[in-house]
Every structure is written in C-alpha cells, then in structure tokens.
Length: 476
Image (cartoon, rainbow, N blue to C red; front, side, top):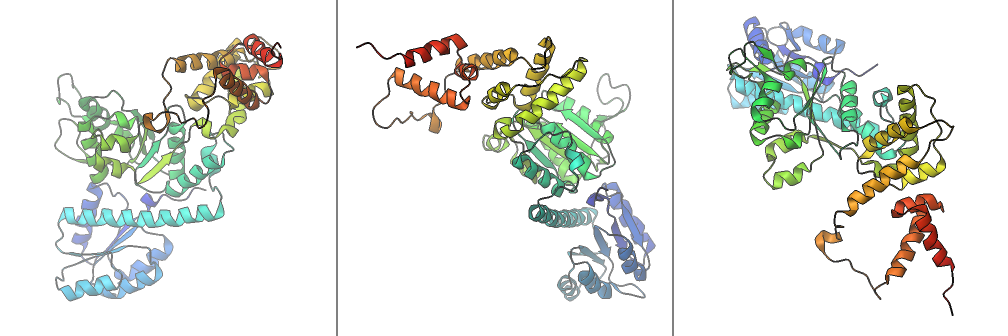
C-alpha cells in the first residue's frame, strides 16, 4: 500500500468563531489548499489528531473550554514536527513571545491580511515537507531498501547508482516541491518522471508537455488555456494542461529551451500556485506537482543569463541526475534482452539469443544516444534477422562504425579546456601509437579480433593484416 501523500493531509483550523473559520477556509481554498478541516470546539482538536495526521494547525488563543495557550504546549509535546500558526486578536508582544517559546511556528494578528496568511501557511507547509523528507531519506540511506519497487518496473537495471536514485525518488515523492530531472538525451528522464508520479500517491493525471519550440504565447495557451475572445480565432474557452493535471503531475520536458518571458510565468506558478488563462484577469489555483526535465546545463545557462536564477533555484529543490548508459554498462545485457523480447513480440518472431561477442562489443561502445540508441539498434537488428537461434551482429557493427565516422568528422577535444596533450618523455612514433591502440582494443575486446576491429574502425581483414605485420620479424 502506498504511503499517503503529504499534500493530502489536512490543514486544521481551530477557532470558536464560525465566521472566522469559514472566511479563513475560503482564502486557503482559493489559493489551492483544498483539504481544510474546521474545528469549532477546542476540546475536539487532540482527539482529532489521534484519529488522523495533519499537515498544519491554525490556532486561536482565546477560546472557551480549552484555550489555545493550553493546547499549544500539548501539541508541541505530542506532535513536535507539526507546525502551529497562532491567529489571535491579541497584539501585545508578551503574548507573541510566549507563543513562540511554546513552539508556535508563526504569530498572526487578526484581522490577518490574505497575503500574510498565505505566505505563512506556504512557508510552514514547505518546512514541514522538508523535515519529513529528511526523515524518509535518512531511513532509506540507512536501510538500503525500496518500499515501492513496482514503481520502477519499467526501468531495467542492476546498477547500484540507479538504485540509489530510486531510493532518493521514494524519499522526495511525497513532497509538493518541484523536481528537476537532468541527463543526456535518451537516458530515461521521462521514465523517472513517470515513476515519481506513481510514488507520489497523487490521484490526478500525469500530463506531459514538451516546451521546446513553444513561443511565449503558445506556451501560455498550452499550459494556462484561454477565455473566449482572448485572441483572433479563440472562439471558445479552452482549459489548459495545468487544469488537466489538477491533483496530479505536470511534466515539463526540455525546460532549458523555455523563453525568458515564459520562465517568468512558470516562476509565478511555482511561487503562488496560481495562473491566469489568456484573456482573463481572474487567478485560478493550481495544485499540480511540477516536474521538469532537461539535457542542458541549467547552472551554466544561468551564469550566461540565459536562464533565470530565481527559477533555477526554485526548480532545483530536488534534483535527479540520470546517468548516461556508459556509466552503468552492467545493465547492457539486461537491456539487450528486454529490447530483444519487445522487438520480437512486435513483429511476431521468436527472440534469438545475443552472443557473448555482441555483449562485449556493446560494452565497449560509448552510446552517445544512451538507452534509446541501444533500443533502436536492437529493433533494427530484429527487423533484419532472418532466422537462427543467435542474433546477427552485422547491423550493430554498421551502426557503431557509422557513429565513429560521424565523430571522426569533428576535431578531437583536447583535455583541460584546450591545453595541449602532455606526453612525457620521448615522443612516440606512429607505429608505436598503432601498436598501443591495437593492444588496447584487443584487451577491451577480450581477445576477440572482430570486436577489436570494430572499436578501431577497421574491417576484420585490415586488422588481420596489421596483426600479421606485428608477427612478422623485420628482415635482417
């Protein structure tokens, strides 16, 4: 059973004045805090907390039966992690200081300005969420366990590095804060976003938007929607994708390509949890959890003034760096078999066995396209497969050699930001360099000459000729 999302726990309002209760609840509801519980009799608060947990308490001090001054230390003793915001008409400093000493998170004087109330509530919820995440993360790090491994069923891995990311996702899944998923193209960022949504326990939809290529108007219309008549051709109201993601996850892919004007609007959504449809001056609340993905270096873009620093720090509360395939090559045999089974089922064929030679070849390839590139290779090989129990290697060799030729058209990057390569001692001859490269290729290929030839960008006969020259002693 999945753990209940922290965002679904109620905010409890405690006040003997019904009008204050309903007015405060209306303000919170309008700002997107949907789960609000009203307690008109202060004697009912502690029994209610025993029955179910809460995310925050807004407490009046002066009430009949049991005062807030009496309840506050009891709450602090029984539920030390539960924030309590005191709301009272008392304006004297002594009462405020005493409340803070007793454990109050904040002290608000009635009548409370709406902006002040919402700012305090949001801050308290964020702090409470972070405290809870730290506790969960500590538990995972110490126990080295996954409680909801089924959420990661689509990600094939045996890598400890990937498992550590799974544990981190479980720890932060219940947070309402944004998550930034970064990594190279094809590394699997979208699959991590889907896993995060499953772990969150959110009941709403997972809504995905690729923001690359969207100008500011199209971005606003896609996410926020529009009112009828907002622009030429807007002949009816349109609910944006944020509305579709209500109570769920809004996944923004390629966030590094977002225009500066759109970045401002996204920042406002994250800070205020409200948005304006095009053509409307009425703010609408949003409770969608925002998850972003990018293959760009946002920190570097921020330093170049191409990405807003305030948005970057808002998005990077929780960061997940998905490693490229070359950093968890132990997963190649598992992924190869998974993709073989999928490709064979797609064309109604029996899946052939991959040879050890093929696994050695793929394990020595750097995979610039990551898992997506491996999948494309396997599906292409299965389409070309003409029978037999062992998968042919030729299409893999051709794909790797084509990539190597493409890379050879680009100048090799010198290490250390353009500094020359340092070769200590005597400068080697070309024959010595060739000898060293052939020896290293054979070592990586575990003595398999076909694999070594592919790594070197040679045909098998060409490598054999070079090996023959190495074996032939020079004439006297």
